Amino acid sequence: MTPPPAKPPSPEVPRHVAIIMDGNGRWASQRGKSRLFGHRAGAESLRAVLRACRDHGVDYLTVYAFSTENWVRPKAEVDGLMSLLRTFLRRDEHELHENEVRLHATGRLEGLSPGVRKELFRVIEATRNYDKGHLILALNYGGRTEIVDAACALARKVQAGELEPEAIDEAALSAHMYLPEIPDPDLMIRTSGELRLSNFLLWELSYAEFYFTETLWPDFREEQFAEALAAYAERSRRFGAPS
Image 1 (cartoon, rainbow, N blue to C red):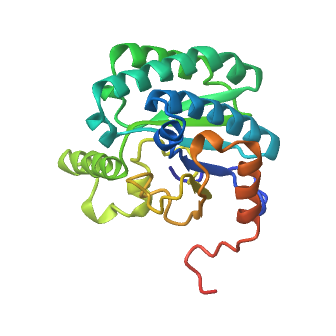
Image 2: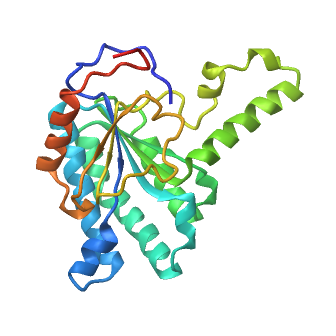
Image 3: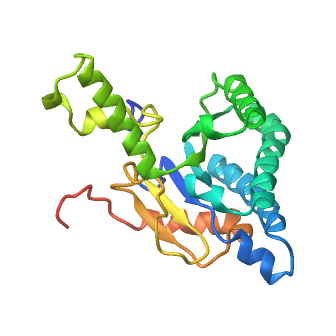
C-alpha cells in the first residue's frame, strides 16, 4: 500500500482507517455463548462501521478478518468463520452496490478454500468500477508474510536481470506489496484493550496514528468509531519530523 495521486485529504478525517477487530470471543464468553456467536455479532459491527465510514468521509477501510495464524484455531471455529465470510459477501453485496463501494482483499488468498475464493473474487469483480468507498478484507494475511513475498518478488526480478540490487529502495518494496494501489492507513484502531499489532500491516502502518479502546468489537459501533475519529483529529502527524 502506497499513496496514489489523489485529492488532498482533510487533516481532520483519516483517508484510510485500518481496524483489528478484537474481542469477539470474550464478548461471547461473557454471555455464555460460543465464539462463533461473537463472530456473528462482530459482523454486525463491521456493517455499522462501513456505514460510518461513508457518513464521515473515510474513503478506505481495511479490516483484519483472518490472519495467517488463525488456522491454528479449532477447525469448527475456522469453518464457522469461513461460512460467516461467505454469508457476509452474499448478504452485503447489495449494500456495496448501493453505495458504490469497491471490495478488495489482501493476503495469501490462494490459501483460502475454492468456495470462499469463488465468492470473494465474484464480488471483487462485480464492484471493481466503484470509487465512492473501498473495503479491504485482510484474509489469510500476515504482515511479515507480505514483506517476505514482496522481497521474493524483487529477488526474482534481480535474478532475471530485470532489476539492479542497487535500485531496491522503499518505493520498490512498497510497489510489490499485495495492494500497492491502496494508500497507507492514516489511523489504526484496535478494540478490546490489547496493545499490539499482531502482525497486521507492519509495513503500511509505519506512520499511522494508533487508537486503542477497551470496547470489545461487537460493541464497537458508529458512536465508538466517531470517538476514534475525534481522537485522531486532535493529533498532529509528523511523519518522522521533530515535534
